Image (cartoon, rainbow, N blue to C red; front, side, top):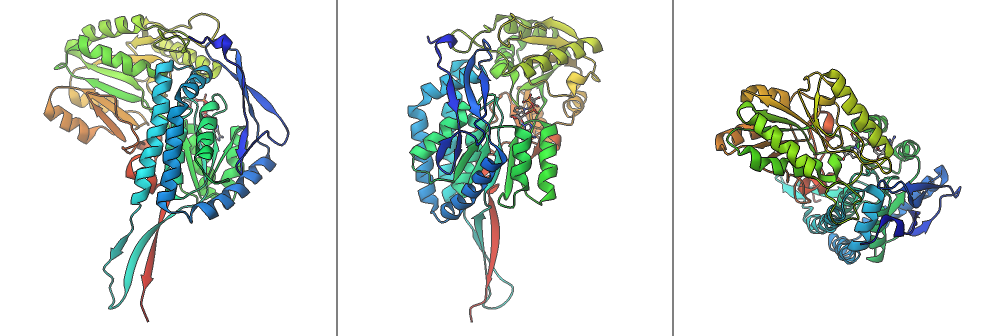
Length: 484
Ligand code: NAD
C-alpha cells in the first residue's frame, strides 16, 4: 500500500487552447489531502485574461469541432475512454488523495468516466432529425439538430472526475466545445480527463479546463456572448445564482443541484437484512452524494429492529484513510464540510434529535466524522430541510403510507427517492407519487450513463445521461424548403 505521506505533490495547471500552463499571474493554491491535511498538490488560478483566452479557444474549437462527423467525435471519446482505463490506477489514487473516498470507490468512479465517454460516443451517433409532413404542396419540412455552441460547465468535488465526464462526454459528442471549471478542492480528475482526450486526438480548444475563484470565473464566462449554454452541478444556492446570471443573457442551463433523498422502508421487508444495504448506500463517499439516502421513514412495526441493525452496521464501518484497503468510509472532503456537518448535527440535537451513534469528529487530524444515526428528529428541525451532505442518517417511524409519502415529498428537494417493499402494488404507487427525478425501488442504483439523471423542484432542471443528456447540448432547426 502507498501511504499518503509517499504521494508526491502534483501541479494542476490550466488547459487552454490545447496547452497546459500556469495562470497569467502565476498564482497557485494548495490542494490538501483530507485524510491528513498534507499538501498533495496545487492548482493554477485563472485570471480574467486567461478566461478570455479560453473563450477565444472555445470559439475556435467549436468552429472546427462542429464540422467533424459524429463518428469522428465518437472515435476520440472512445480513445479517451481506453486511455482512462489504462491510467485508472493513477487517476483513482489521485482522487483518493485529493477527495478522500476509499480507493475501491475511486476505481469505480474512474470506470464510470470511461463508461460515460463510451455512452456519449454511441449516443452522439444517433442525434437523429426528422421529416415532418408539410402543410403545402411541394413544401418539405425537415428538423435537424445542431450543437448548441461553446458550453461553460462547473463541476463539484464529490465526484471530481465522473461529474465532469458526464458533461464533457455529452457536450463533445454533440459537437460542442467547452470551458470546464473543475473543482479546486480536487482538481486531478478533470486534469486526467483533459489529458486523456488530448492524447486521443481532441483538437485544441474543444475542451478547456480552468481553476481559480469560482464566483469570478462563472460570472465572467456566463456573461460572455461566446458561451451558449451553462451546465452546473453543485448546491441549490449556487445553482440559483448561476441560473439568474444565465437568464440575464437568455442562456439555457442544465442545473443538477442538491437532494435530500427519502427512503421508505415497509414492514414486508426483513429489517435486519435491508439494514446492511441501507448502511452501505448511506455512507458511500461519506454521504457526500447528491442522491445519498438521508431521511429513512420506516414502518412502525419494524422500526426498532431496523434502528438497532442500522446503528450496529454504522458502528462496524471502518473509517480511515482511503488509501488503506480496509477503509470503508474516508474523511469528509474538506474543512468546510466538517464544519457544516458538525453544525447540522448540533442544530438537530438542539431541536430535540437523539444521536444513536456518531455525532462527533473522529481524531483531530484529517476531516473524519463518525457515521451518525439520528432518531426522534422533529419534522421541523433544519436538518430535515437542508441537505446534510455528509455521513448522517435520520431515522423516523411511520404508521401509514400516505403520511410517509407526505413527509417524503415534504421538502423543497426532488432529486432521488427510494423505497424498499416486496409489494408490487405499493411499488407501483410509489413510482406514481414520489416527487423525484429518480426513484429507486429496492435499490440505490438509479444513476448510470444510460439513464437520465436530474431532479425536480429545487433540485434543478435538465438531465445528464441517457438520450436526454445529449439532447441538452443540441438545438433543433426546422428547415422549410419549397423547391423552385
Ligand atoms: P458551495 O455551495 O460553495 O460549492 C459547491 C460547488 O459549487 C463547488 O464545486 C464550488 O466550487 C462551486 N461554486 C461555488 N460558488 C460558485 C460560483 N459562484 N460559480 C461557480 N461555481 C461555484 O459549497 P461546498 O462547501 O463546496 O459544497 C457544499 C454544498 O454543495 C453541499 O451542501 C451540497 O449541497 C452541494 N454539492 C452538491 C453536489 C451535487 O452533486 N449536486 C456536489 C458537491 C456539492
